[in-house]
Length: 335
Image 1 (cartoon, rainbow, N blue to C red):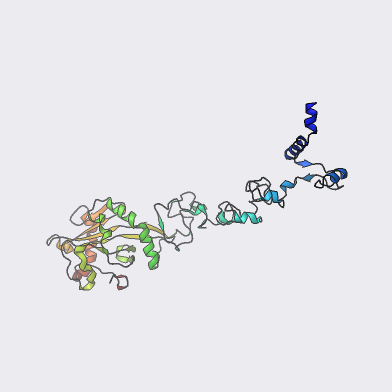
Image 2: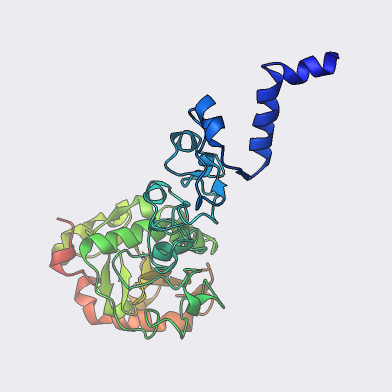
């Protein structure tokens, strides 16, 4: 008797009905009599067929109010829904950072189709921590893992599939680009040279750089170079009017190269030290040292592999009247 009262109560019946609606995916149309008693009931029609729950209607404000609802067209989980977030025609998808129409979405046709898209996370180079790339030089980054040609070796600078990396043609840089390239690689240059144990490479970047920007030096392998001089060699800044360099002068040229694809590579360090009179008549008492980017000492005058740097003295002998010092072009000189 108690159960019968509950079944007929005004609170229990709606609960049961609500459960049947929530669990089922469809309901039967209401009769005309039912509609008369309940104005919200769905009218019966001959062609109504199966009526989908109104909760799944994208025009239903109740659905829109629940962004996580399975039937909400803005819900990225509703992938099967043609009006879902993955549908490029869905205006909700445009506002969604993971939407298919967002150019920063690597899964979308706009993002994935362009491996060089700066918004595309795939465009980040795994070599970025070690490599520098000059902006605006080369169409693509050979270190880009989304580049199908670079897939076998994403860090390879010379990928035969990448037209940007082919050849060794000279690259012309603007002053801003040359400075940016050097700013990126200068720390790694110093770190590499320091492995040689040479005393000067530890402090050379704190000396005066008499070049206003890195410039190409044909006599140093066509690389971009700088002209540093220590305090003892400050008369270098007088250029052709400098006169002989005093003993203790140290001149340092660090160097780097730039590939046609914009990749910046470390070059050797070229050092000149003015030694005491009588050190070497062949070099006007200059000691030449060439240090490779990895810190290996290629050769030093009067020391190990002295013969390998003999060409340095021979080349500088051309300007013997300037105490074997070449001066950079006037357009690059620090005044």
